[in-house]
Length: 113
Length: 114
Image (cartoon, rainbow over all chains, first blue to last red):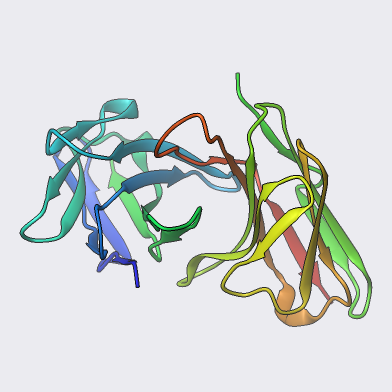
């Protein structure tokens, strides 16, 4: 069965420092991977996705994610964090055989001024 | 600008009431989804629909039903609300025009059952 894991409930980082939010996955076929962000009392917004090809995927708001097949990871990164990046981040994988998407439990990012 | 809207942002209902949550998308998407979001559990799929009048159970369908009479509208029904259905409910949609589409989410409905 497809699954994703976000090992950290919360990540704290100082403004201006690089940030990483971790995600590992388990899939039986090709991995289709996504990152979403949720601001308080809002729905989820799409940041980026990996389908195939280049292992470094660029997305919205300066975020990027690195796909690593050998480590089955898809970590979200940003070179310089902003206080406004503080939010809840979700990793997800598309179940290739169906329409379903499976989400991780979320990581709360706190960027400290 | 693409949009998924949900009928209410906040809702308070009593135990045993029948509750309707409505979701509308204006993107002509084929697929629509209902999730509930609880702290520490992430998003869990309740039901999804891949066409008008078509539906499939997700991971936690018990206590819920859905209706999709028109392509743009997907309703979630709590037949008899219970306190353990207090949660944030999120609707989403995707298109079949993209091979691996991302989901577009509504703003969510925070339901409290007392």
